[in-house]
Amino acid sequence: MSRIPDLDRQALLRVARKALHEYLSSGEQPQIPTGSGALLQPRAVFVTLRHRETRALRGCIGRVSARGPLVEAVIRMAIAAGTEDPRFAPVELDELPDLRIEISALTPLEPITPNDVVVGKHGLMIRVEGSSGLLLPQVPSEQGWDREAFLAAVCRKAGLPDTAWMADDVELHAFECEVWEEDA
Image 1: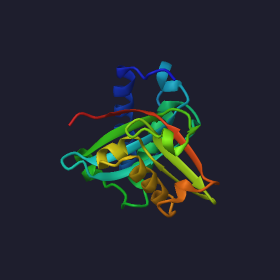
Image 2 (image 1 turned 120 degrees about the vertical axis):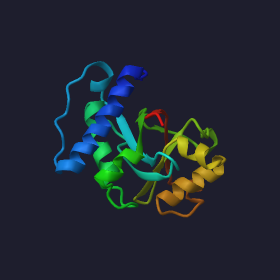
Image 3 (image 1 turned 90 degrees about the vertical axis):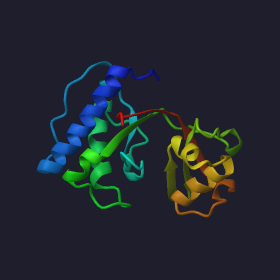
Image 4 (image 1 turned 180 degrees about the horizontal axis):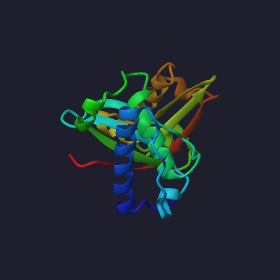
């Protein structure tokens, strides 16, 4: 996958903020802007909202498969991160200035063995017995986890025991991300 140019990254951050602002103001999804190049490439994406000062998580939603142009996915996931993350109450319009937006553009999922997982490089998705969980590659680094702690955490995210990654019927997939965020 080709790297997303810096100008497009900045444009996507502006689009994400504008989309969330418009949605919180009106309840309507904004028009999807036209774009070119990387903005129109199909990419899987996650949008993360964090408090500017504390960096505490405020919302994170994404898709692991590309279902259309990157710019469209960013708009949809920015709105979803602010309004649909079940771990948090919906973002209020007046708190939006205190939030920082982070975008993670994913590479396609690839099968991986537990021994091949590299902390800080790979994001993980686990599927076992109809349950699934996903953690972005930046999470274990932020938490100071080693490989086994990362594998246990992705199991917990799926509602599974910490050692579920050791089962024979586990599907473990890795991906990498380009990650960028708004300035402080």
